[in-house]
Structure formats: C-alpha cells, structure tokens
Length: 120
Image 1 (cartoon, rainbow, N blue to C red):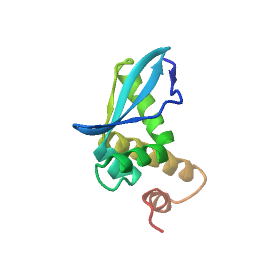
Image 2 (cartoon, rainbow, N blue to C red):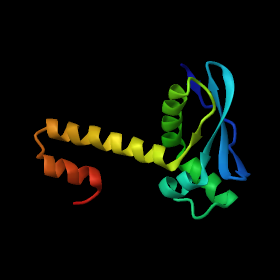
Image 3 (cartoon, rainbow, N blue to C red):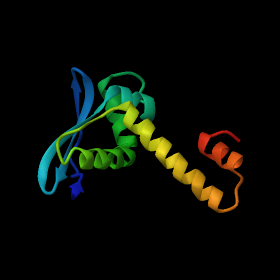
C-alpha cells in the first residue's frame, strides 16, 4: 500500500474537535483525522481550540504521518481517526525496540529501561 501526504493544509473540525488531513492511498484521496485529545496528550496542544490543534498538528506532522500509515495499513486504506491510545502504543513499541537495541550494545537492562522512560 502506497501512502502519500500531499502538501495540503489540514482543517479543523469542531464536533468532535479534531484535525482532518488528506492522504493519498494508492493514488486515491482518503480523509483521515486526529482527535483533539491525541494532539493535547502527545503534541502539546493547550486545549481543543482551532489554533492550538492546527499548530500541534504541524509540529507533530512526522509522527502523525507514521502512525497514520500504520493505521491505514490495518484498515486496508479506509479512513482512520487517530486517537491518543494509538500514539501511546506506538511510543511503547519504539521504546521497547530502543531498549533492546541498547541491550544489544551491552547496556544493562535497568539502564536501558531508564533510557526509554526518560529518567536518568
């Protein structure tokens, strides 16, 4: 499945508060969205307000695109709504991968766990 994110500005929609964006899946346009909650929890939007959500989307576009591609593959190209839990799952999966990579370099498991949890 080929996913392409054209250079089209995302749009705010207020009920429920979310940001919608265009993805081309195998050349066909698919409208996807990300919830206000996900933008607040993972991309530092301060409230479900249009400017906050749009700025958070722009700041997080790369991570949003990566999670969206995974969700589109699971949905076989049908539109998806990205929710906060999807980003928690993706971050946990990346943390585990990073921890095992550190472990492979001779870093003790406790140190690898600290590196992925943000503690020092």
